[in-house]
Length: 349
Ligand code: ADP
Ligand code: MG
Image 1 (cartoon, rainbow, N blue to C red):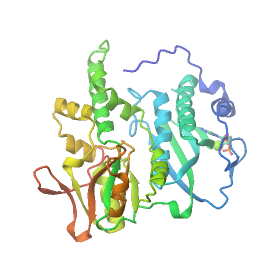
Image 2: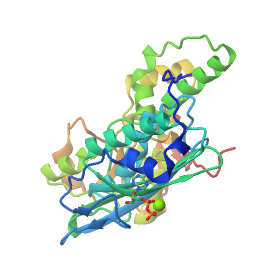
Image 3: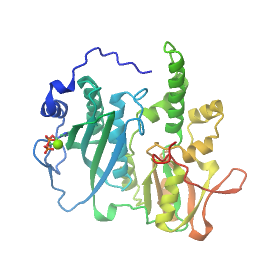
Image 4: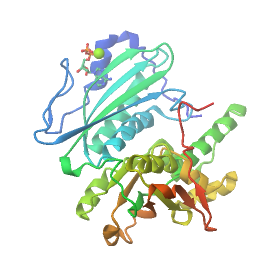
């Protein structure tokens, strides 16, 4: 569907491993004071002084986590960084460095890897993280990307999944469900394209949804906003696998139950319209669709006044005693047990 209009195809074997690494990594500059040594030695050297360090890794596999039929490589590079930075943000820490490891088959020309790394460099700049190392190797089939992100925080700033208490308010940033519907739109266009390669997709009605799927952003700003509002969440998690799955993680680890209210879920108008067109229930998408990379956190009731009316935050429910269970309260006031139907790489047929 997204055609590579660049006719130049330089074989990566022409450069050799070290030539390729140099070529791809020369654009990375070190800006974090905690980076003493970046790319170029056997290991990077970091100095976090009296800060705590948080570390998180993700592995993305072609055909499982992304489809290059509609994912431009530059977007893929950007998104690979975002999903990792999001995990650091979900600890209420500041992202500082990443390492980037790739395994790539010789079907990819140098120009394709340049695109991938242009996206990685753009995201690294946007989020202020130094690219301090990685590994480059070959694969028999397809592309694999593994990114490790590091971040820093004072010990008392860190927010874990296990700190929520009964009666705490459950808050979500931004809106949810759009990335999943963006994927549905792209999948539909891919099918149309396979039948008729000359079709020109008209995607104007879905721009927000597609952007949420192809160019998600991590909520690095939330740490700053919460700090300014003098709020420390009691528990926090990022929404990568879908709201219900993440709420259940928070409840299980905090030993609470919860009520989430259907009529409070923050949905973009484009999501609602597209769900109607696809004949899918928008609530189902909002609670089960993943990849929005928003943050879900809990705060004490005393902090409610500090976020009331703030367009960045929506209170969608509250924690309860564990015996009350984990529920969605529908518009008709019936209680439905929440199930983790979120996207799960290991369960995909
Ligand atoms: P080693 O032999 O120790 O594995 P390499 O030759 O693989 O070292 O890597 C040389 C330098 O380039 C190291 O600093 C490594 O971290 C960095 N590097 C290798 N591949 C990547 C990559 N894909 N992205 C960023 N840095 C990389
Ligand atoms: Mg190596």
